[in-house]
Image 1: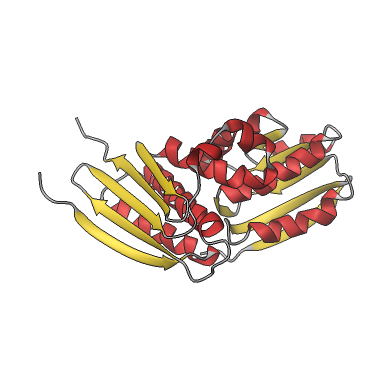
Image 2: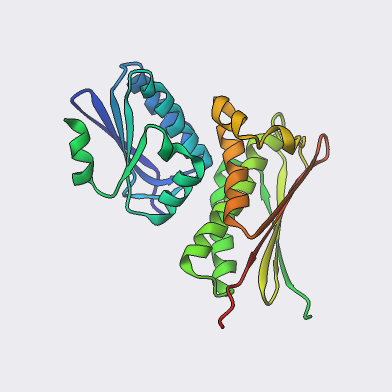
Length: 115
Length: 144
């Protein structure tokens, strides 16, 4: 099992959070805590790099949904980077893809959102 | 019809044990020749059932357990997840309105949606004060 790890970088007032390991009920509070100071700076977009996230559950998506509601106040977007079909499936079941949450398959595809 | 093979496990209702349930069900489902994608779906469904128990069953009590029973039939896997916690009214948690508008309940409403969508059958029985039992079934795809 990959140990849980968060790595935060920032570019053009848009934070990018790389999440390694399993984003489940045991770890979602860590992500929530890391997001609070970032959200207080009112970023336009937040990037979640999930390429090394081996599992994500409803509580993890709940934290992302909360971030999405926050950035929606100033027309911001959440960009999820993942190539896993399972993530696409749970994202569609959550309905978040119909809101301001966009899924892209790789970091190159995410770059256009920085503009 | 031959009797199912039962496998039972009891886990502490704590967030760090939900990953153990996921590992266990991966092993059980792999044994039954489910495809990798279906194993992933079953894993999510069981994980959400355990998460539900950890989050909502034992709010003031950290010593609670989750009983998981796997029944391996020839044509299906049945999983029963039982907690002995405070229970809830399923009617009050599954409406999409609540799921979307109440931030704190996003996880719960969505978890039940995942279980119902990813499994072939899912039943939730909960009684206030007597705990919750979630029974779910996945059929083994038939080779024609």
